[in-house]
Image 1 (tube, rainbow, N blue to C red):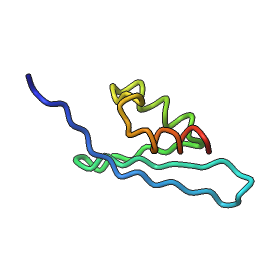
Image 2: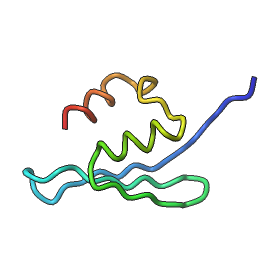
Image 3: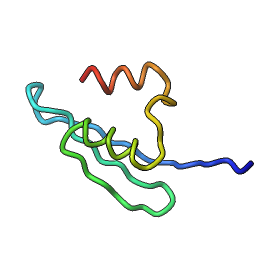
Image 4: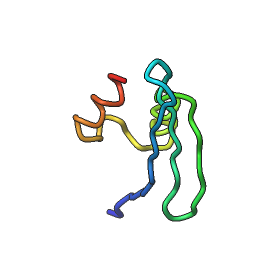
Length: 67
């Protein structure tokens, strides 16, 4: 069985506390960057690209869904 592996650099920011978090996800291998206006878009992208949110460590998943 071959191991599936993806490596990304995730950047999160917001300009003001009242604004939503934004994200940039950069593929570590290709350098391709994807930009997301909010965390819901980021999670949707991860789900659609076979990166199951359920497999994330619970504290990261909790943080994503609580902000």
